[in-house]
Amino acid sequence: MIIVAIMSVIALTIFPYAQLYIDESRTSRAKADLEEIKRALVRFELDRITLYSKTDQSDLLGSYLNKTLFDPWGAAYAINSASSTCYSHGPDGIPNNGDDVIAAFRSKMAATRIIWADINMSAVVDPGDGIDLYVTRPGFGAVVDRTGLTVGGNPLPLDGVWRGQEKRVARFLVSGFTPGITSFTIAPINGIVDQSQMVGSPATADALTIRAP
Image (tube, rainbow, N blue to C red; front, side, top):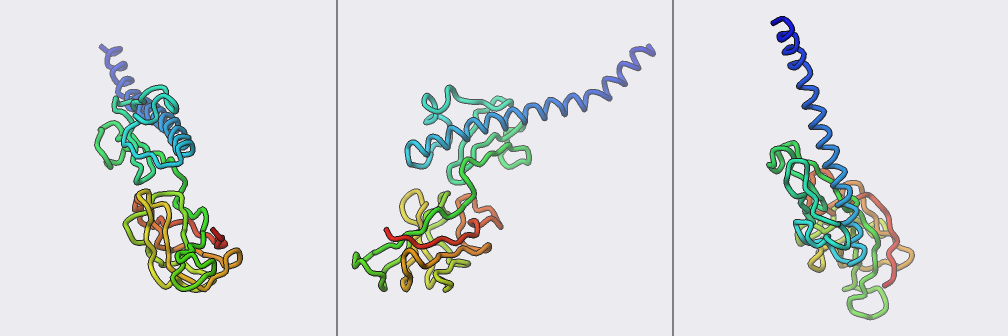
């Protein structure tokens, strides 16, 4: 009886640590799987020059993934192009319950280039022209808040609008700049937000020279 009691105490002592080890191992495997899916998504978008639009892995199969990947708890990993993430809902399978495992497959919202939009085709910068801002992630909403955005040190006169279905180009109507010389500046606090709508996570601060088309 004493031996049984001792073994019971040992089991009760070890079990929580064993369970913790199992949980951590499963989470580590989920993170590794998501890294594989993340690499597949990056290759897909580079090859196709388009955003991945499915919520599952189906369009990745064959060229980018050998098979559909399932998390350690039996559910297929999912993809949210709007928030630029792939994810598992974790052990309980319930979204946003504190145990989700998530990986971002696109870089943080940031500008990649800024191009003069010669809207009236006059070949000179004049009223009615604008600039097109290209970014790394799909933008949120229809309007781009001009907060924190300047051209040649001057605040933009109007909010911008996202162009196209993918919303990776924002157009602002502005003139009075010189392509190849004038800078477009994004302050640390700005209104360029991606579709994840993460509070306190605007586009990366930057300064880019406006280029001719």
